[in-house]
Structures are given as C-alpha cells and as structure tokens.
Length: 123
Image 1 (cartoon, one colour):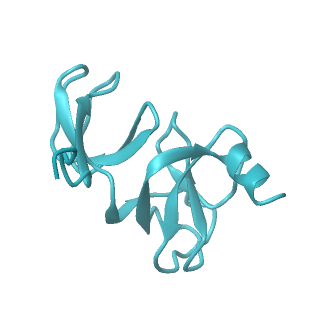
Image 2 (cartoon, rainbow, N blue to C red):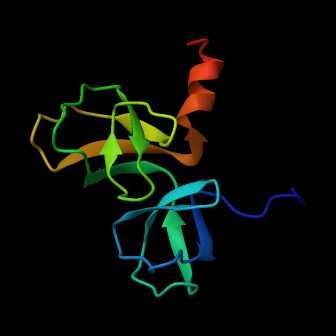
C-alpha cells in the first residue's frame, strides 16, 4: 500500500516545555502518550500512544473499572471527574482505591476536551 507510513502506536514529537521523563504521561498538541525516554525540552521524544500503563492519579478518589480518565495538563495527574479544564485520555482497566497514588489506565492516544466529550454524549 503506497499510502501507509507507520503503525502509529508510537509517534516522535518535540518534548514539551520542561522536557520528559521516561514512563510519564505527556500532552503535545492533541497527542497524549507516555514518554519512552527522558529528553530535554525541544528534543525529539517517542510517545507511546496506546497501551495500558500505571500512572499517577488524584489520590482523593477511587476508580472503578471502565471509568473514563481525564488528565490535568498542569499536574499531569489523572482523575475520573470530568471538568472543562481537563482532557479525556483513556479509561481505567482496574479499580483504584481512594488514597492510591497511581492507577491503571488504557490510553486512547488523543486528548479530547472533557466538555466536547460531554456534548457528544448529550450531557
């Protein structure tokens, strides 16, 4: 197929302000992914867009399997509470108890603003 470029499960992007740390979640434009390497700001970094990762969460809440998960782009913490300032990044693949500092998330690979997602669902 002449138009095929790559599988797309990983993309190489410029590292955001502050750089990246391997294994942490980042948003670059509309792309959401986990950094494969630690890189300074502006350097090229590979982001893994899909898959299941244990990522930092807001400790003061619990997650149920299947909860939609949103990222606060300032803190990069995940929450299951949709707010207009957050972006949808995936779903919980297992329960996470209150006070846990991390939870397991399946990434969707693209950042959808929480308010757009609510409009699509008619909320």
